[in-house]
Amino acid sequence: MKLFHFLRAVFVIHFALFLTLLVSLLTLFMTLVLRRNAASVQGLAAWWATSICRAGGVEVAVDGREELDPEKPYIFAANHQSQFDILVLQGFLGADFRWLAKKELFRVPIWGPAMRRAGYISIDRSHGRQAIKSLDEAAQKIAAGTSVIIFPEGTRSKDGKLYDFKAGAMVLAIKSGVPIVPVAILGTYEILPKGKLLMTPGKVQIRVGRPIETINCNSTDKHKLAKVSQEALAELLNT
Image (cartoon, rainbow, N blue to C red; front, side, top):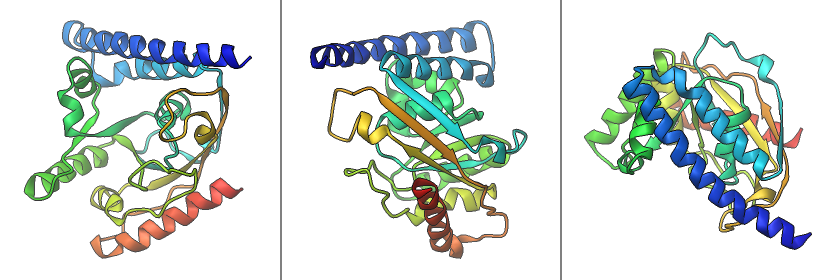
């Protein structure tokens, strides 16, 4: 059985690399040649994620989606335990959203241009005017109707526990004025913890919380908003 799990984990790595290349090429073809818009390729991203999860023996259940209005944009604030968080959110959250990604990723051949064509939002994490400008541009896109996901802890948890939220992560919510939705992910740490290369099969649960309004918040409220959002997510994790 251990040998089977090992071989399966090795297969998943190669399968994921192949599928990432395939979906990137299909995204470029659909948007550049067929002239489809970014929204039309989101199904490809969901298929990419669910296919990898199923190949790895990962089962995902979602609770709380009824709290969301499909006509409204949100900033989904999720805990971050594993690289697998990206797959389970992309494949199973069931909301139309885009990822925020550091600008360096958009320079990766094939993958980077595909991310841009899919409508993902570039963030300059350096200091100074460019960083502020990229945040302002991202906030404008969100306010105009684009939902996004953030990991407000700022890094993957090394032990599976919830880390303190960074107040800076709340700036985007305040600038855009859209609600923050806490999203608890349980089970991905056991599947692929930080520092581990090979995954193990398992079950994952996604719990979607109630939206937290930010419309009346300003820059002085970022620490309070971080605390409120963290407490809401912690409650979901411990329910």
